[in-house]
Length: 372
Image (cartoon, rainbow, N blue to C red; front, side, top):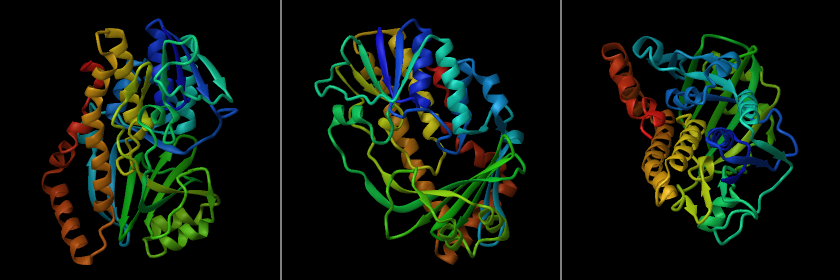
């Protein structure tokens, strides 16, 4: 088949690699004039790592990433540990990586080019509204993100709603143990972890009445972020003190697309199911989609795209809902409720640490490469 993938993001490039290796002629069209240092840190959790390994990119990712061994939940106001999910000790078979998005995109592009994929930058795809592929093509894949034109061509326009939350992201010099820290506070939280090359990634989320644009490239005054977390403990305040430049974007809830395909068009990743960042699953779901779509095309059948959607839709709805729920856990504002919740988590951490991690088996142990 001749296939065009709209968008050189994680899902689009991963699909292009798998499809090209299956013998298809694939080109990736990216609207940006060049692919540069876009984004910040991302987490590739074990379910995403299954796809990375199946694509043969495990060693390449290891060179540009840090292997994480735990996730720490911290009372942000008191700088006091609440719970630790010790992945390394409790589940040594699970692989978890922390990487700058730009480094992951670079290695995906290298793998795509090696597989014979053509990459075209500075090209915006205007999908036909009748479900047809582009002229001369057999298939159009929409990996074009939150504001996907392919999604709109398939489903029509849908207006997301503002969640009442905004997020800052920043990179600062720093290192530290290879773990993800979540510092929780009333109506706000901070997530931070180290990246390769002496950097530390920071994402800070605050609930507020005034909304911000969903465009994550807009800059903001670091002092505004510092004021929002001025009553947090010294660890967070010290991180934020070192921020010289930060970006701000509004968090909007998008419905999971009702239809993931129409005619010769199909969508994946954020184009199909944008998710809030409270479970760090955006990149991982895109990797899963890419593998399942390529496998569905390889396996064939009468209704390939319906099979792809059926296999994916219920799972991503569960992940999207779980991410939304996490924001409530992180942002408990009533002191008595926070005390009860944190006390319960500390008890579980002390008495049954493996049980806490096992609650996420449905998410992290899911392996699309072994079930397709």
